[in-house]
Image (cartoon, rainbow, N blue to C red):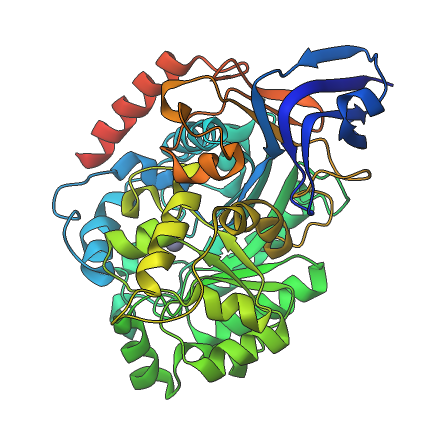
Length: 452
Ligand SMILES: [Zn+2]
């Protein structure tokens, strides 16, 4: 039995409706027992931490990323093009990934995300060249105290069959399914409080055959794990789906039984009102990736309409090569700013996304998208996953009128502290147990080696 007491926070934001001044949290064995004013919770614990001057929030949840792409940020030739040309430029580079590249980039990207407040991360890796496996990602995450949902992603539709990727990076249908079952058996923990999960994640309609999409859905439902893919990201993809399958992307996925509360799509930019409504009815979720959508000039996702329709919405920093960062606080800010553009005169209409709603997408919304009822809000019975940001800094000076909104409206920062299951992840602005300079040096060496 071990107990943790955080107290005297400037404000504790529970994300289930309460903002508690002079707040505190009492947790036992990694689970929250009490969230209240510091005077109204137990006064002692095995570990007591004074958070005077800090805002405390639930740990942030990232719902879409490609950690391996930290190796190809700001890559020449892929800086100023749309999705398909960007992919064509990068596939041959990524085809050189080794297990070492996969594990080191996973670690680097997870550290970067943790510093920005993430405590739960989903990563969508879909190509496994040169003997790399999802096991290499779990190896990279080893010793990091955050919740990691890895994908056994896949690509099976190569250039010779009309797909986008070169045949050198696609895999055979049966071996994908076999290795997916293996990965789930070894790494997936279905229990509440899980630190490791596996998601079945074929890459996209233009890289995967309909047969693999359908068989992946069957496998995921048999194994009781979740399903994820990219969908309706660009106009190119819509054109591809219409020509090849005779359907727009959302309708195509409906023909494959790829809808429902166990499914979430990344992006979903190019959708009509009727498709939004059907996604809401089915409770199919989305990972909103505003930075990537701007970086690749993909378009404006209709977030206001998704929320009105009851679609579960989380935030994703998306690929490091189409965002060039892995920063959850920055993504919450981008979500707010891009929504303001989406509802501006001449472009669209609707209510402005508030800073609190952006935080909701980054916490409770993300938890819902990942199918977790144990994280995302600070309440008794939830996991003791929280972040603390010191308000006494240049970036927040003059913003104490509303420190909660300031977390989103002011410049994004490194968080000062975070805990997952009541154990430290970030302390004093650094990830516990990580040799940051050594990791950066190793990662840069591997990135150089990959570029060739
Ligand atoms: Zn992506």
